[in-house]
Structures are given as C-alpha cells and as structure tokens.
Image (cartoon, rainbow over all chains, first blue to last red; front, side):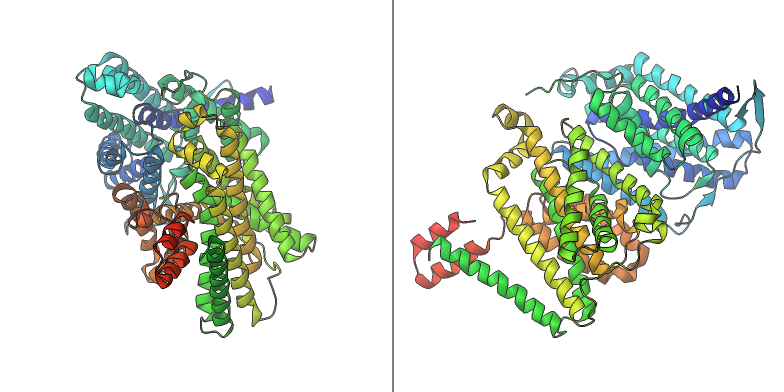
Length: 299
Length: 339
C-alpha cells in the first residue's frame, strides 16, 4: 500500500510537471509543423515569461488575483517577442538550407540567455520567484498542492482554448492548411506570412504561460532556466510525433511522469538522462512518434 | 614544374613554417602567453574541423562537440594516470574512444532524415557532463581532475612541445580531410548535403556515409580534447558545456560551412579575438550569438564566401609562382587542376 501510495503521488507530480512540458511542447510542434524549424529559442521564451511575471508580481504583490493577472503582460510580451524573432531572424532564411535557420535559432537562444544575463536588472544570479503560501489538500493519502491545481487548471484550460482555435476558427483551419502544404495554401488565398506569425503568437504565449507555471512550481528563476525544460519539451514533441498537436500533449505528460518516477524510485541524477533515453528509444522504434504519421519525402 | 614537384615544394613549405614557428616559440619571440593562446587556437581549430566535416560538408547539424572533446580529454587523462600509457598512445586512445561514442550516437539518429542529430548530440553533450560530475573516481567529480601528466615537465620545453604537437596534428587533420573530400568518399559526402534524396537515387549509401562522416568527426573532436588534457594538465566538467559546443559551431559558420581554410582562419582569429575582448567581461557572451545570427542572415557562406568560397591551396599557389617564373601558360593551367 505504501508503495502504491508513493507511486500515485509521483504520478500526480509527474502529470503536473508534464502539463507544463505539454504547453511548451505545443509551441515546438506547431512551429515545426508549419516552418519545419526546431525553434531552439522557445525554451528561453519560458524564461522571459517567468521574468516578466516576476517583475509584475514584485510590483503588485502576490495574491491569487495578481498571479492570474500576471499571465496577461507575460504572454503579451512574449508573443511580441516571438513575432519579432520570426520576422527578423527566421523569415529571411526561409528559402535557404534548413541548417542555416537551425543555427540562427541557436544564436537567438543564446542571445536571449546571455542577453538576460548581462542586463543589469536581471543578472546571472538566481532569484526567488514569489509564491502563494503552500496549501496541501489530501485525497486518499495523496497530497495535491494549490500550485499543482493551478498548473492543471491553467494548462488544461489553455489546451482546450488552443484546440478550439485550431479546429473551429478560420485562422486555425488556415494553419492546418499551411502545415499540410504551404504552396497550395498560398494558392488558395491564405496569407502564409500571417499564419506563420500567428503560429509564433500562439506558441510564444503558451511558452510564457508555461514559464509562469514552471516558476510557481519550482520557485527559482535565472537566465538559463529555460534550457532543460525547453529540451525536454522538444523531446516530448518528438515523442508524441512532431507536428501533431495531441501528440505534443501526450508526449509532455509521458515525459513528466517518466521524469518524476525516475526521480522517486531510481535516482534524481538520472532524471535528466531519462528524457534522452526516451528520445533514442522512440527514434529507434517509431521515428514518426506515437501519434505522428510517417511522411514520405516527395521529390 | 610538375604536379609532384609542386607537392614536394608545398610539403617543404609547410614543414619549414612549422619549424620556424617552433623556433620562434623556443626563442620566446612568441612569448609564453601568445604561444598558449595559439596552442588553444590550434586545438579549437582541430575540433572545429571535425565539426565542419559533419555539419559543413555532410549537412547534418551536430551540437555536442564539447562532449566529444570531453570524452577524448578524460579518456586520455585516465589512460595516462591509471594505466601509465605513453602520451601519444593515450591521445590516440582518447580519440578512438570518442569515435566509438560518435558511432553509437550515430546509429539510431543518422538513419533518419531531419534534424534529430542536432537534438541528440545536444543531449549527449549534457549527459556526458553530468556523467563526468557523477563519476568522481575516474574524473575527479565537479572539482575537476588535477595532476594530469603534461607533455613534458621541463619548464622550457613544455610550450614548445605543446605547440609543435598541436600544430602538427592540425596539419595532419587538414591534409586528411582535404584528401578525403577530394576522393570519391568526399564526393558522396558532399552529395548528401546537396540533396539527400538525389544522392540516394544515385546509389549512394546515405546512411553509411553519414555514419562514416560522423564517426570521423567525433574522432577528430576527441583528438582535440585528447591533446587538451596533457597540454592543460587540468580538466573540469564545466569546461565542456553547451556554450563550448556553440563556440565551435561559430568558428565553422564564420569561416564558412564546408570550407577548411575558413575554419582554420576563423578558429585562430576568434580565439585571439576572445583574448582581446576579455575586457568586455560578460558582454562577450552577447557578441557571439549576434555574430552567429548576422553571419547566417547576411553572409551564410562565411568569410570564405567573400573569396568565392574556394579553398586556399598551397600546391596551386606554388604552381602559380613557378608558372610566373617560367612564364609558361601551360604550367599555370595545369597547376589549376591540382588542389
């Protein structure tokens, strides 16, 4: 019973972490689906989002209301940033070999990290993110904290919203069309540039939200905090099938649970390595990912 | 002058440049600080050459060459300290170990088309670093590994020997890569970069050549790291972080992807620039990514793209000089064909 209890507890923690990964993985998978680019800078958007909300919360003080309100400026700031990055850095490279855009994405990622590091009001030292007082609720011997409930509610709410936008609005359907065939979509009168910008808007605002949730769950923020979650979220996206939106969510949850179970039952040192183990596994067994469709290359 | 003569003259020129530089180091005309910076630059160039082979020539982005450097360096250190092997054997062993790791990583990832190698090598670099921190009996743990035997303990000869070995290795690597790339293997490798599907249709075994290029690339990366261990005498896991991998990438990109001359020039130039820019402290960290982005957007072929993306060829250069002296048009034409 004790083992089962601990197992359930770790799974719950994993689902909470996984929903943050899932939010971030959605950004990777949407951008990859549309421009075929691994947006390395996406993990750093998480960091920027966390810092924006940190400064907002420092200004307003921390209450449940201000915490929810701080999502707004963080998401607005990040989506502006995401669109600017796309327009300035990725758009000129759209017709060049993919490796060029990939290298630029790494450059942008480093620029964000190191830029935050040298900015005098951020700096290299970790800061404590303001949190609400810890309240734990107990169900059948399993603890669920207030933060975890917040994470679940916000993450699942945003996912449902995204699902609505993509499947039931005009612009969402245009996104699907562009990801299916960019050229044909343009011929049908879809403004491809606008759709790509919109993809970055969606991805970056989800990234910012993930940043706030991540900082609430692990209340320490620093300029390099986005690297590891970013990498794991990308792996989650590959695991679920890159380009597939339900796949990214599924992959995020699986990765989160795998990580906390490793931490809980094996060793905390291995927890970072397990993500890469899963990546290698999926690449060997089913490279298109759990929910991805195998794509033949056209000549 | 015949092709053969050109080659002989070129080899002599390279040898004499190396000897002259060494004498300059020995006489301390190039002082110890400068020779140390140059030696580090040489190591950076070696690893960047390895990276250029897989990313520049084969077109597969790899982001973990600091990891291969670490494998090479720690293996060499372990071979020297635990098994007391001679330095050169240990260096070779380190490079081989790194090639083995490259092979292992390449097997699952290079079968696939797409950018998976980038993310897997990135993860590899990080995992290696975590392993180094958590294997204290082999690696000294987070505090680092001290007391690695250096090339020589002699105070006078140490910079000379380090310099000589590193630059000799660098020359050998350049020659090896140049010959490889001008062979049929090289043509196959470059065809993968240009168009993987077409290469496959032409009957080129894409997977085999990718694995071949990546393993060799890891070998060269490990070789650089292996030289680093006895040169520095101290290793710590944090020397081999992601930042370091990106530094090698910047060398390759700035020099021009798929250009060996560019890598050598950019490697030495950037390592020196890093020393000059020390006064900027942390702001250096911002300059690098900006260089990377600007080069990629405005000059994707790097500095060598400004010179028509040609390789500098000593034999051709010698041929031209000789051609001028002999005022023979036919000889300069002939020499143009020689790489």
